[in-house]
Image (cartoon, rainbow, N blue to C red):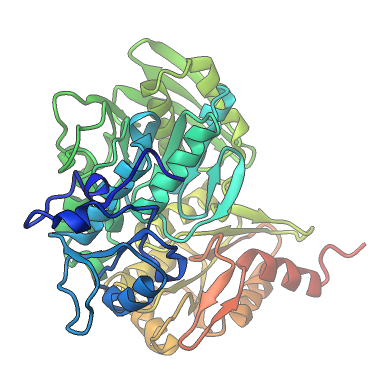
Length: 498
């Protein structure tokens, strides 16, 4: 897919270059852009990124052998490479600028909403996408679980894809008559430059709690990455900023004068405020006080935490000009998000839910949602990811033990770490409380133990992996879906039999 006559010079026209391109190189035709050498075709411009584990320059020879016009990298060419090489100050920013140019700047023809924050991004994007589709718009949804493009489902590689993949999706959506895109915008994507120069119509901030400090190192650096969504380095600021009034970090967000700000929350001072919240097993009801009056809101989602997600999505829809009655209908139509307080029911006399909660704050929230349903007891199973922020492990252990009646500590995605070492880190927090608990590194055995512990009227929370259908071990990735495992184990226990 090309737009006009592309040359190296035209594709890189918005990319700062240390020196002008030689005429012969500048005039080379460009038929495509790739950062994966396996997909290079003749005439492609290949971008080679330095990585934590792999240096993309090692694939430059393969790309050239497949007919790449030139290689673009922020690093110099290897000594043994004699093809066309273009060095740029920042590889991913260069890729974003080139992709935007090559695909005809589709972001400037779409209404794009970016949602950032630690928790709530996925549910908020699902809600907003439902609202937009209820209004009759053809949309794209990009996030942790999967990507949707005009009704077609694509697998999600990253919460926020590389810029090249984003612009391909946006171009495809435009060509199919689409008008709106909703996307989770991660701190990694903002920091690495994956969304450099991308024009957002609306930017949303949900909250900030401890996560990803293995990458960002400090909460201030983590916050600074989020801030870039509202005051971008390249391009205009979003026309609308939707901010959580009840979150202390959110109130630190700086906005530019051209951004209309929508404050939402449950505390006095929020312009869009939820009042008289009623949460039951059947869902949520509350009154939404707005500058223009009070609106009744009904949702099949459960728990006070989803009030915030609904408010964020409502304000986003309002900023996009969607009528209020359509927003209300969209909220009522969005019943469930995969792996977010997802119920597993085969006829057992207790509730089993699977949730993606993988931070201490998210775990506290999901347990609070369960408490609102007034169970007899709460049994919480959780694990912590390997090769990730170790500091949050005892915090998660404390969160589970403080609010639950029985805790099962197990493996999540241990990756290269010893599962028992990860569990020991989490147990530091668990042992701060007298809550009965066990540790079982085998996740399937741990789930069975949690289900066996449950009594009629209890709630079992299987936390951490949510929608993920795999488990990442030291030497391999295996198929493992908490939802399917729980269903199978419950049936093996005799529930659901005809």
